[in-house]
Image (cartoon, rainbow, N blue to C red; front, side, top):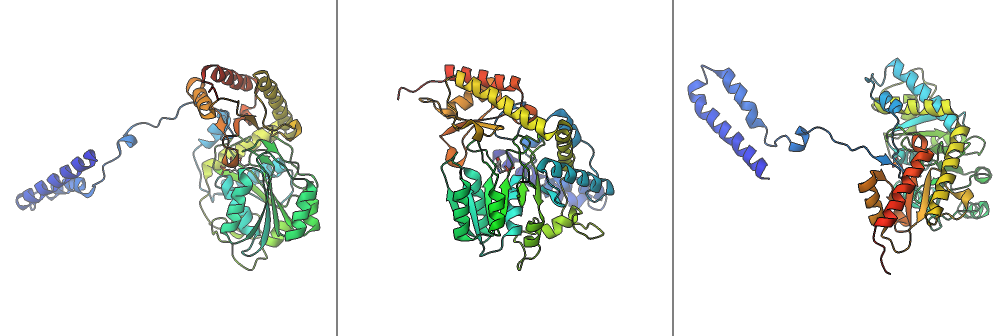
Length: 429
Ligand SMILES: Cc1ncc(COP(=O)(O)O)c(C=O)c1O
């Protein structure tokens, strides 16, 4: 405040001095006057923080995302940018599309990456395939179903929630009963519920949705690359993910794919989608997925983000999906053993339902989970997190995804946890 007042005062004085001098020097030295004037046009000083260099500490990101970005992907994102409508960029976007088709195991032509985080894909999916007044059924067993329910409500859908406590899962019979009752146009399920650490079974649900003429929308933001998903074989109509989890790209882009059934619904709507930015009529053209001969400007895509995403998809393609799923399973199993050796309890009792990328631990009795996590961050530079939404106060979460998914990282996490358990106060209660 004081600094701003001082700066304003200096500017005023400079202005007054210029005005006074002006009577004398105006005709003889207009240039000098002009040089002084810019001082007076700025009343907000440059913020002191902006005059310091950028500082971001090096941290081990062993939480539920973002995860550490490997040098190869950082280098791709750091390349000089090109125009978002240059032919070379279209080639890169075409490559991204193929990389997503592989990662999703789909032949869908309508496969793109959103300019935005996972939430952009969530909104894009709902905004384009649902019209106001239509019924949707959302499975909620953690925060993500609740988020999608809110998104659908905001655009005017009739939302029917199926709710379980965090970590609970839905049988196909339960799902079919609710779909039969509400006759929704869309059913939503989270494959990798990162707030609870659950990997939900998907088999058979797509068939149920087809039988009842309903689209099947699946969130794989936290599970893609870490647990098997087969978009075409499992009859998933719309699938999306994020860039910053097992793909290890920086946050800010989100792959999404729509099959023929989803395209039929979204391109034969009576109303326009509520969002211009997320309107698939425009996005499909921008990504060269419509039949039109030319791509036209819709928005400026995040060029550096797309470079990084392309590299992350290239790494996944080189490594192979099956190898990536196997590695996540093995490292997760190694982590489970270490956690149990520390006397900790895994939150999801059924090992087959655990999400290999994000492991949830029940909060050890008598400890303050915030204190444990703060201790680990301060003394080990490791990020682990608590719960999210309904799982807050129930779990602590360790994410070992993609590049971070290595036994030596599991060892580091276990060592830090053991240290925190030893040094943080246990309450008597
Ligand atoms: C399962 C799941 N869905 C959606 C999201 C939202 O993604 P974003 O934070 O990239 O918007 C997340 C983020 O953690 C997630 O784990």
